[in-house]
Image 1 (cartoon, rainbow, N blue to C red):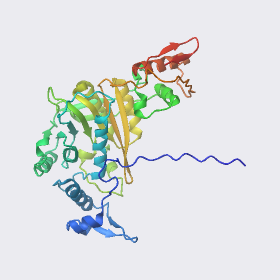
Image 2: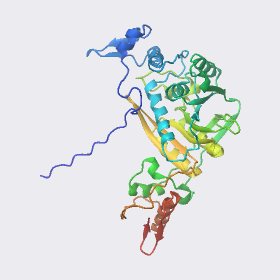
Image 3: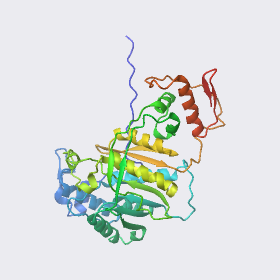
Image 4: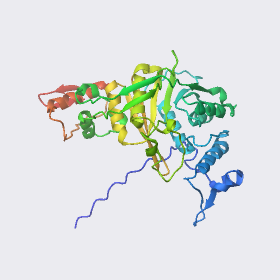
Length: 402
């Protein structure tokens, strides 16, 4: 009998290699011996390993406090009920943005000596991203929020770290100004409006690329009703290297409490938004259309992978120049990163001086009836042209010469 082919094992994304905890995860026993306040929360399992109760909010908050103090020399605290971040996971996001800024995807306008400047949307009482970004990399930040509690404690966490306090500004966003966003169905939009740098969003084979050009991304009719996010918070003439956001992932507070395995706290203002994260991030996208190159990179964390497709479709429709995605993995928790830019790419996706010419073919399935074979070729040509490649459409021979 013929031997069965073994499935190729897919490597799962892991913690970022530059993350402080990549090769040195937190040692609960050591931390308990050095910090008496943490010791009551540590117990030992049958195999002798030190553990904490992840469903105990006080335990997770104290762990965050001692990690920030022990590994980052940061003094930190939040009141009961406020969202408690995990330090390794948040560090992953910081290092991913560092990757984006170091890449040559879009040109840099910075000169030597310029401090990288970021904007943290909804910094919260924990103010975790400005604190980590400033302490790890020397970045400057504006952290925005709407609630008095978040603003008060974010400011306290900045002031209590005088060695980096000059790098962080806490800014109040007017919670009285309501913005309404309604996403419409996109079924009638032309293919040419949906061209995107597919190689930048993880679509690497030509079959998937051609299929993606015609895949339907119906709007979910999610609406955002709330204070402005970036518009109004960014001052006239301000320029930032990036923005980042840990958005409200849920539509209801009941949905936010469905995970019985962890207790990270979180108020309705931090966890809940009408329309959930999809509506909130869509509002950021709409704001970015107005602000354009005020930011080199716009980014957000995404809690549900299923929302990425709709959000990428939205980005395609507004004409961004580049889209990037990533996956953050920390323990049993998965989150995704979404980044986009309106800055024209600094490099072409496909080299115009390739050493050898290859013929690439693909099969398309499941196309909608309104798209003919000619539409396919025209969309492929448009995709390559938009990406900066030199190409020529030949309808007689039915091919695109790249």
